[in-house]
Image 1: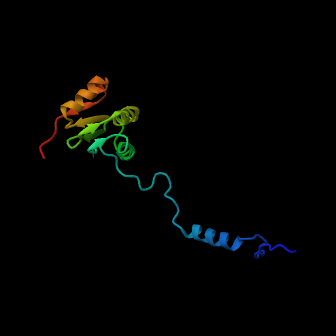
Image 2: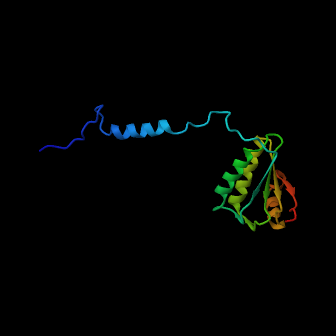
Image 3: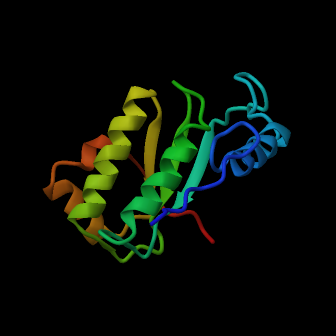
Length: 142
């Protein structure tokens, strides 16, 4: 009884033509930009709108977007404004997300401003001793 074996390619390695095609595709792809190229100018202020419910199911996307904005700010001068005008609820996962953002921003010497936060949510931050971690701003007229 004979067993079937893959036929060797030109260089004797089974599957090599497929690998060679993949290598050719990678060679023609645009190279990644080198460090220092295509850098955006840093900003002094960015605004992010907090979700209606900042909690377990919205925290990852919110944190990812906020950290991306922090990277665009000028260290030592920048401000990230978090617009809470449409936010109705913040749970423990949302509070943790704010604490993480504060830690990241403080390492970058960037201020986080909470704008338009409802009184009950502000009281929640006061109860959890997080009120002094942030700057506060009243909601601007729409």
